[in-house]
Image 1 (cartoon, helix red, strand yellow):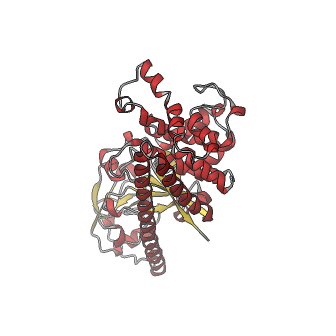
Image 2 (image 1 turned 90 degrees about the vertical axis):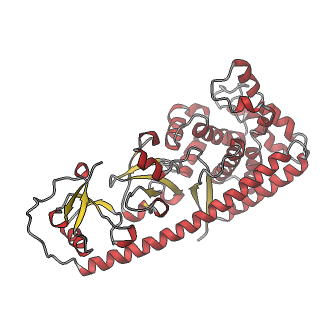
Image 3 (image 1 turned 180 degrees about the vertical axis):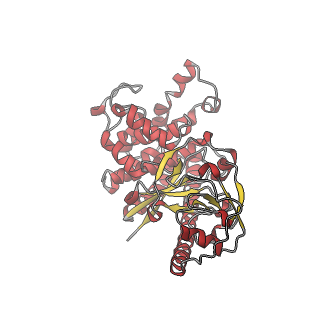
Length: 409
């Protein structure tokens, strides 16, 4: 939206202003905002600015006439001090958030590297691959079980790599988190993790030109791809140490409760762990193979495919991911656009959002915990509808990957 530059003397309540200052150089929550009262105008004048930019399309009213008399109202010192203290606290929280996120990213990349290595071993050295997998799953399970609360973070796209690695880790981590939400015991959580990690291992037997084919598959190609669960079972059977209880996940992760899967199995024929992983697998496939944004993927599963999945699992998945899962592009109640970065179970409606503000460099963009600033999410926006500058700034992920940060009291 085009802005106009005006003298600060022309500002009035209801104008949407954009300050020509970095986020840390003023006491306001954002560098662009709608003026709510005369005290905020006094604070802007106190910043020493002669001119500012307003956005008419976002303003409730036009600015004052050019010949408006100068106002010498001094800002409320107590209010300014409170705002500055609050801003300093937000900056400290943002710095801590970035440190936590960086550590989570590091752990994610380490786990991804482990998945890559064990997948490369599974055909030639299956026993070593299973041992490596158990070590990875045990480490993840230990963190999950020790945590009082989990914060789910959106990971960066990272380097390009085989989608199988990302998908396998993503489905495994989310499945284990959901298993914990379902109050499964430690052994069941580990079994879920093992089955989910290897659920698509049979795709190693499918020609890469089929897996990566951008055009619709032919019927023979579809039939071959549909065999990957059986190929996967053949591979894990090479290692006697793979837990028998998790084999159903590998073989039946495309079966649905209504019998619409390839083998026509129904609810009573599918164990609870397989039911859980099949839901997570479908969510992740919708985000990647079908190009749905996280919010739409979760919504379509809930609204259109209820009969295919365990309703208790579905309700708990929404509690885990939030109404607006990480990776969703949203418009806030303030009118600003942002990218949902993190969500925690104790505050599902108020995730942490990276906010678009052209006055702040992208690498320094503010990540706002909505429950701490009194903002809400007004609506979800498809990334394709974003203006190019906003798209580049927010950098919506083409590959949605999650990892968790354990929190203890």
